[in-house]
Every structure is written in structure tokens, then in C-alpha cells.
Length: 383
Image (cartoon, rainbow, N blue to C red; front, side, top):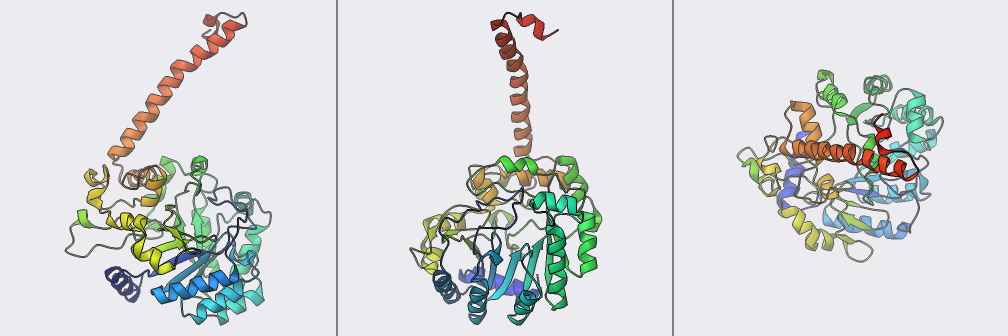
């Protein structure tokens, strides 16, 4: 982050201004990524007029950075109308897209509208891996062609690489591809739960040994995208530091107008279809609760050896059941970085071990009982 942007962010924090907002225009998508946390059906997206009205309210509230994302933003036929309106309001625009629908004409319009950056998700440099994750044959080729178009127009492109079990071995290849294309590169080693609370996709998260290799790979220092808390002041007590920017200088609005502290923090704070954006920002009781939390308030985390350096996400903690509690995914990353397990991680491992022990003891008994019921002695199970 540049010194100027840091200064603007610090000033926004002091003044209570929503400096940065992510607005998802749609959850519809032309890819069906295996790790996606969204429901891709349209349950009544905001209209063009509603979005324009919202953007005007955001501008009046002091929002500077506007990230337009999805789903796939180019699935909306009014995308460029929305983008033109947003630029007229002088937002600094960042886009997130798979870029599959971008051709030269669209790239030229993005250039002319002065988009600050375009983030494109690339999961592997190998088509068979990337396309298996997106479930769209040819998607890697089409995304790479779009990146070339965008770069030819002088646009800044960021290749975002979410790591999971399927592509954990490919991040060196993706970074090399980014260098070849002249794109920036960032990676994120965390798969998040679905917004409806479904945690089944967490099975895609990279394992302990893979994370350890990643965090000890010196060539990737500074490339891992995972921490969004504002830096503490030089003389600030670390126990008084903010756990995250969510609700302090940043927030998220869904295609249906739901207002959340962050896209990874699905605590509903209001709906912009029913209330003004600034009224939710200033008066939401849920946001006030989020803003009240300091490191000292976090259950178990304030006593943890990793407390002042952990990349703990309060949204992930919220989805585990307690926004003041630990985030197991972040405990695992801290362990991978340092080799020192947190108290929460040790407790989690003990719980899993105990559960497995119970299963080992119960399953044979159940199986034996079932076999006995059909005329086979339970003792035969052990033989």
C-alpha cells in the first residue's frame, strides 16, 4: 500500500468514514468453481436504478475505493452503465472478474473509463487443473487471452491464486505465468465457508504440511494475501488494536442489498433497499458490536502467543460460532508459519482425536451388532 493510501485509510479510520466498499453486482456466474461460497441463483438482484442510487449514497458517505465483484460482473448486461455512473462519481474502481467474457472492445472501454485495477482468478498454469476447478473447459485459455487484451490496453491486472488441495503444487507456475503476462500476483491459502453456513467446502483447504512449505518458501514472502487489519499506531498497546478493518473503514453489500462488515463476515447489519447506506454505517447495532471489539476482548486469542501477529479473521470466527472466538483456519496458518501450535489448535486436535477414538470404539460394536442380527457372531468381525 502506498504511503498516500495508508494516510487516507488512517484518516478515514479516525473520522469513521467508509473508505472502501465491495459491491457484488450479481452472484450469477459463468463458472462453477468447486470452492465458491456463493449461491449462483438470482434471488432478486438490485436493479440498475437501485444500484445507481446506492452508489450516489456511497459517494455522499465518503467512499473512495469501490470494488465491483460477483459472481461474474460481466453477466450483468448493464455493467458498463453502472461502471460509467461510478466513474462519474469519481470512485477509484477495482474489478474482480474471471475475464472470460472480456474481448478487445471491452478491454478498451475499461481503459477509457480509468479502472484502477482488474483482479482475475487463475488457479493453475495447467489447463487441466484450472478448468477442473472452474468446471468450464477452455476457461484458462480464455482468461489468459483476456489478460493479454487488458495488458495491451495499459491496464493493471492482478492474478489472484486461491490455493486448495487441487492446485497446491502449482503456485510457482501461476506466478511465472503472471510474470510472463506482465501481471501482478497474489495468493490466498484459505477456502472460506459458504455464506449460508455450509462448511463442507473447507475439506478443500490445503493440509498442514502444504501450508508449512508455502509459508517457509522465501520466494513468496509478501505475496500471501491474508491480513486486512489496519496497522496499530507506533505507541498503541497491541491489546487495544483492531482485529480487522471490517466495519471500521470497509464493508460489503450483496446483490440483494444486504449490508455486511465484509464479504467473509456474513453478519447482516441492514439492507440498503430499506435504509440509507450512511444510516446503516452509522447506526447499525451489529456494526457497533463489531467496532467495539479489541484484541483484549477475544476469547482465548488475547492470551495466545500469536495474539499480536495472527492473521485471525473475525468473519471466519463468526462462521465458527463466535466473532470474539478463534478462527481455526488462522490458527492452522499461524502454526504453519511458526511451528508453535495455539491453545485453540491443540484443543481442536484433542477434540478430533477423542472423536476418532470414540468412532473406533463404537463402529466395530455397531457392525458386530448388525452382523449378529443376521446370524454371524460379533467375534467374527475381529478375525
